[in-house]
Length: 331
Image: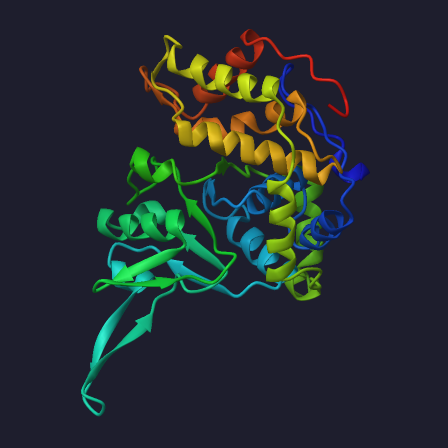
């Protein structure tokens, strides 16, 4: 798919992938109708969804984070709810609550915003710590527990959370335990001039979101996730992933390295990367392609200066220093 083959990143990172999965091609093209100039970011979000994870989008307001989430929900025909995480939002707004019904002399459960396939959690780092922590169980377990009763969430259940940089007014840094629940973190950034012109022209007399057609549904996503899980991981790839995570734990600039959950996240994203390219086995390039997206928000640095840029530079150094295994095509 030529549109997604022009990616150029830092020298040792995987430069491009070729999308061979027809369903994924259709998803990408539909989402592209509403979000232009962010093709690689769109692909990475879909990879995270197929890998069974949640996505954190960090950027300044107005660059298309919410539009991207809405475009994905329409393309995949997922039930969607949006909650704006202002300081007065309560945990029960997310999870739900029980209320006494006088007419029946019993308590009934009122579902919160989390009861949907895709939860768009806008500006998550502007709300209280209690409300942020309410997301932890539902992101990890796919269920919420209210008054001792556990309620399963719809499947698939995906959280796309947005946050503003901590330099913005009214924001606070998310705790490491919550950051670790997100499979990947992405930054959309400003569009280039041509993409911004195209965006202005597309919105002159209509909303491009209205043009998006459904090309999948919840059942489709579940079936694709099962196929991703079946992607083969060879012993050299297992070792390569562990070598990369161990390198973060021993790097002099890193105070807190990648946890075992991070190792698992890297493997899951690499599986999804292999799947969309039409392979049922992982190559080292798959790991390299998604490594920075999985690792960057999980690293705690010793020197907090210029923290927005330094994690990616350190990950680049690690990718340069860790030997890449020789895994043959078809292995």
